[in-house]
Length: 370
Image (tube, rainbow, N blue to C red; front, side, top):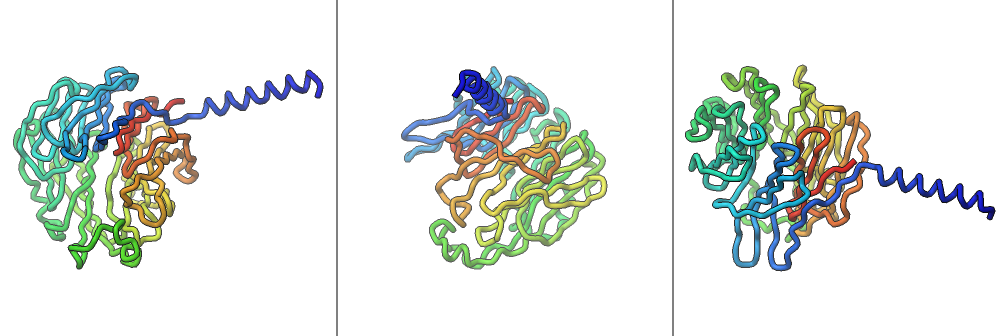
C-alpha cells in the first residue's frame, strides 16, 4: 500500500472519530457508589445552569436517611447534605425561591436550596406548583387538589375535586403544569383495586402477572384558563395510567402513560394540542418503559426510558437507561448514554435547551454534552 493511500485512510479514520465524538451524548457527572448503601433519587431540578439539586434517600440494611445532592458549578462537583424529612419532589419558581414536598410537610427555600424551612405540616401530597411566591397548588392521592395563597403555609381543598365522578379512595393526581401562568392542567387517574389485595408482587409471581388483563382506568383531567380561579374537569376511560405531563411553550404537551406487565407495551407517550384538545401517540416500544419527557422549546424532544428485562417491567433488577431524541416526534434517535446507567426510574431536568440533565433512582446524574 502506498504511503499516500495510508495517509488518506488515516485522515478518514480521524474524521470519522471526530464526527463520532461530536455526537451529543449523556455523560456521567455524579454516581453514588458505596458498597453498603444506595442512593435513591426521587427528583432533580436545576433552578439555573449552575445550581442543581437532587433529593432522595440513602438506604442500607438498617436505615433510610433523607438527603440532598447539590452542585453550584453546573455539575462539575457535587456534595451530599442531610435533610430532616424524606423528600418526594421539588419545585422552583426561579433560581432562589423553591419548595420541597416531603412525607410530612412542605418546605421552602429562599436561597436556592442552601437552607430549607418547614412552612407546613400538610401531608398526603406528591408535588406542588406555584404561580408566584404566594399562590400555588398541590396534588396527591385520594383525589387531593389543594391551593394556597400564602406561600404554602396554609392549604385548602379545591371544590372542583369533589365534582369529579370517581372514587376518592382510588383516585390519584400525578401531574400538574402551567403555560404562561394562566393555562394549567392537573391530571391523574382512578382505577378500582385488584380483587386479590394480598397477591405477591409481580416480579415474585411472573406467570400470574402476565396472565392478568390490563383493566381500563379513568383518566381525570382538570383544565384552567384563568390561573386556577376556575376549573373544568373531564373523565375518560382508557387503558394505562397517566404518570406525568409537561407543557411546552408551543401550546402543546407531552404525557406519559404506564401499563401493567400483562399489556403488550410498557408505556406510551402522547402529544396533546392544547389549542384543539386533540391528542395522538408519538412513542411506544414493547421493551422500553418511558418515565420522563422534555421539550427544549427549539424543536427537539427527549424521552428517558428504561430497557425492560424480559416481559416483567417492574423487576427489582434495574434496566439500562435509554434516552431518545426527536425533531419531529415521529422518528426517535437513541442517544449514547454512559454504559453504567441503569435504573427503575429516570428523571429529566433542564435550565434551558443548552443545559439538560438526567438522574436515575440508582444514584447517577448525567448531563447532555454536545
